[in-house]
Length: 551
View 1 (spheres, rainbow, N blue to C red):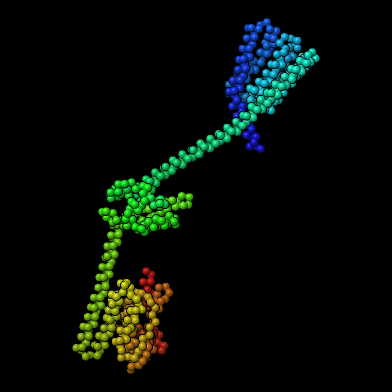
View 2 (view 1 turned 90 degrees about the vertical axis):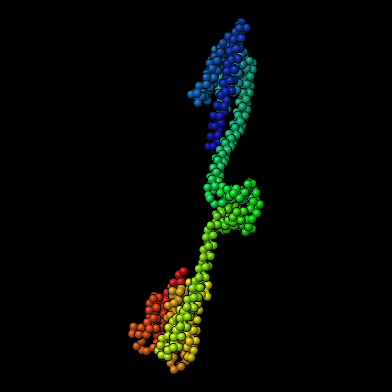
């Protein structure tokens, strides 16, 4: 309801102010015609009795002049509706004064009702007041005319003239009524159409402005986008869903010029421009179109002068959730590739050298063992033979490590279970005269060479002692080797036998054996712990950290 009232108020303002030029023109023409008619009548029909009445009708001229002035004076224009109501109310006063002061029998009285008809028609024709206001003012003018004719005796003196004139006045009132209604109705339609057109025009203007802003922003964005891509030293190209070039940055274009690609690539398929491009690269671009995910890979380009190895990133460009283009960023990694290949070559050479070193160390240790054996052949001292054999076993445990490293794929780690098995086999073959069995329970694990050497020496000393002293007088028995992984990157090594056991008063502190001293020293060197259990034989339980498990 409020919106409807606001619309009608807006229409009234539009209807009144849009009609000011036509009102001004109509009132001016009426004034000019009335003045000319009066002048011509005075000049050519001065003796006509009706001239007396025309002079009285000239009282309407100030109303016309004031109405015209109201349309020109801006302060009054703001209240033009009220001004017109006041002026047309004054017309009622003029109708009464002129009619009441003119006897029915006076010359020219027959112009009175005609003048009233013209006034009523002029009201409905020239004044763009609210239709209801026009009807009320027009009715007041007709009623004023009616009461005036009663007052001046027209009804009593000339009843037929009274009725005839009243009929014509009412008829003109009805004509003016319908004219005003039609004019306002037409203007209402024009107002609605104009308003709609104005709203659409404003909307179009706003849309046009928004489009200009969007186009300007898009243009600026494209310029920034291209400038950014051109500033990047990497090679960048964009292809559409048909694998046609959409854009190449300046770095790639410069390379094209260096390679002699003078033809414009935009719009051409990538495999036409690059006949040497791999099928894998094309499949990767298709994959990005299908999945919409960034793909990182490598690309090899074989130009005329050189071969380029590039690291590529294929990035999807989305529009409305669909991949419409794919941008490929390629960074020249040729120099890095050469460095990596050189490093790989150096690493390979280094491995070969390390294997050769381990092989030579093993051979040198074997030579040392041979020299010891030669030396023992020239000496029959049994104690010296025992000492030399202990030294030989220690050297063999170290040589065995270098042999494992020489044969292993990994030059800095040794499979401890395999090493212990080989070591126990060598010791068992050395003491083949004993009827002793070796039982192994070994978990698979790798250790570094820094750990393997002490572990080998420890295992050699304990196994050798077991073979030599745990089973005297050719007794039968068992030696068990257990290697187990422990929590927190540790492992346990247990060497046990079911022989005669150690002396009751045995301890590392009081024992003066070189072998036990070596065991104690090496366990401490590895930050390990050792425990001795003499129940049903002898058991050495050792716990060590394994740094290799951290890497």
